[in-house]
Amino acid sequence: MKKLSFAKSFATVGLAAVCAVSVLGCSDGNAGAPKQTYTGGVAATVNGVEIQEDTVTQAIQDIRTQLGVTDEQSWGEWMAANDYTPESVREEMINGYIDQELIKQGAAAQEISADDNQVNEYVDSMRSNYDSDEAWSQALESVGMTEDEYRDNIELSLMTQQLKTKVAENAEDPADEDVLTSAQTYVSSYSGAKKSSHILFDASDEALAQEVLEKVQSGELDFATAAESYSKDTASAADGGNVGWDKLNNFVSEYTTALADLEKDQISGLVPSTYGIHIIKCTDVFEAPESLESLDQLPAEFQEALKAMVKSNNESQAYYTWLEEQRNAAEIVINDMPEGLPYYVDMANYEKADEDTSGAITGVDEDGNPVTIDSTVVGEEGTEEGGDDAVADGVAEGGEAAEGEAEDAANEVADGTEQPAEGDGSDAAADQPAEGTTDQPTEDAAE
Figure (cartoon, one colour):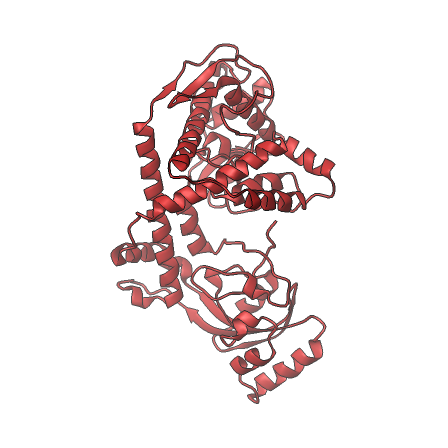
C-alpha cells in the first residue's frame, strides 16, 4: 500500500515531509504561546532552537479535526488503516518541524528572506475570496490558523522557494540519455496528442466569426492569416493561432471536446466557451512509435517538456541532498514522548483490515470514515473558490512543498495538470503560459 505522509493524508494539499508549507497552523516551533496547554515541555531542539511539545500536539489535533477523527475510536481506526501509531505520528510531525527549522536557519545563513509586500499581496488576494472579514476568519479557524500564522506560513513558503532556487543552481543540466529514458517512460501517454490553432472572437461577434469561418472553409482566407488578423488572443495570433498540444496543456472543456472530434487539418465550426467564440484547427496528431530510440522521434515541444521534467527532478534532488546535509550537520535532540497526550490511544485495540489496496491509498471521507482513493488522482484536484480549503490551497500556492515535486513535474508532463490563471478574455491565452508550448485557452481560474 502506498502510504501518505500523516499531514498530507487529509487533503490533496497539506504538510509535506519537510513541513515547509503548512495548511494547519504548523507555525514556528518556538514562536509565541501554544493555543492550548497540553503536557508542556520540549519535543525537540534543533541547533539549540526548541520545538515545543504543545506546538506539535496542537498541529496533530488540528489535523485530526480536519480529518474528522476527533474521537478515540475513529482516530485509532484511521491510524490502523494508514499504518500509523501515536508514536509515528508524533515522530513525523517533529521531523517536519525539524526540517522547517533547518530551512529557516539555512535561509538566514544565505541572507534569504521573504518580501513583506509580496506576503501582503498574497494574503490580501486570498482574503478577497471571501465576502467578509468574518468569513475569512472562519475559514482560517476551520484549518486551525490565525491570520498571523497564515502570514507566517506564506512567508516561510516564499522563503523556502528562494532557498530551493538557490540550492538548485548547483543542479546538473539534464543529460540527453536521462531525457530519453524519461521519454521512453512517458511516450505512450503522448500518443494521440493533438496540436491545434484557434481564432478567438468576442462572444458578441458571432456574425463576424461566422463570416471568417466561411471564408476559411472555402479557401478564400488562410487560417493562420485569419488568426493574425481577427483573433482576440493576441499571443497565439502572432503565431498563426498556435496554442500547442493538448497533452501538454489544459484547455477549457468546450475547446477540448471540439478538438477531440477533429483530424489533422480539419477545422471546427464555431465553438463557444467562457473566453468567447473559437474556430479551431487541428494542425498535427502524434502517434507514439512502437520503439523510441531517439528524442528526434518526438515533437520539439514534448522534448522541451521532458527536459524540464528531468531538470526539475535534478533540482529537487539537489534540494533533498542539501536538506539531508543540514540534518547531518545539525545538533538535533528528540525527547521521549510524554504521557497524557490527547492523541494517544492503545493501538492494540485497533487492527488493520486485510484488503487489496494495490495502486491505491487509504484516506478518510468528510465524516472521518476510511476510504480508498486512487493514488493517481491525489494531489491533482483543486478546491472550490471561496471554500474553506482555499486557505489551504493558498499556502501551498505560496511556495510548493518539497515532497513529491519531481513526481508532480512528471505528472504535469504526462497529464497536463497545470492550472494557470484565467485571463480577462481579450488576451486569454497570453495569460496562461504552459511548459514547452505557446500560450493557450486554459481551463479553471486560479483561486
